[in-house]
Amino acid sequence: MSSYVVEDKTINRILAAIDYAQYGHDDYAPWPTALVGVERRGFCITGEIDRLTKLGPIGIALREMNEAAVYARYEGRHGDMAGDPYEYETIPAPTIHQLYKSLQCLLYQCAEGDMPETDLYKALRSWADHIANHITYRLDAVEAAEWG
Image (cartoon, rainbow, N blue to C red):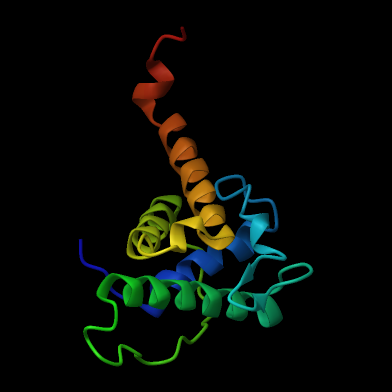
């Protein structure tokens, strides 16, 4: 398996969905409230998440987790892997399908080292599972299937 640092747009889509979900949008709820108060390598997010003061730092935490996973995968064999610093950008909320793909992409790229054992990874994994269930139950074939 190869691993890489995802683009800022991947993280920003996830953050846009978190921002949107806070206001009760059913497609995205429940958003990963576990991100509030989560600690990751000395980084702590506390209180309610708001766009200006919390989403950017969550994005940085997601990027740091991604970079740590890439480093764990390649154990420093590629020298300094530091790329451009993460930049938060306010964007429109993605479709639920795009959110799911972005979550899956980030989770896959972070599935190295001890990252899957972190609270941050687990919160995203749980949210991705919820989104997958939500998408599945909206399919016509599932709706038409017999119960039981």
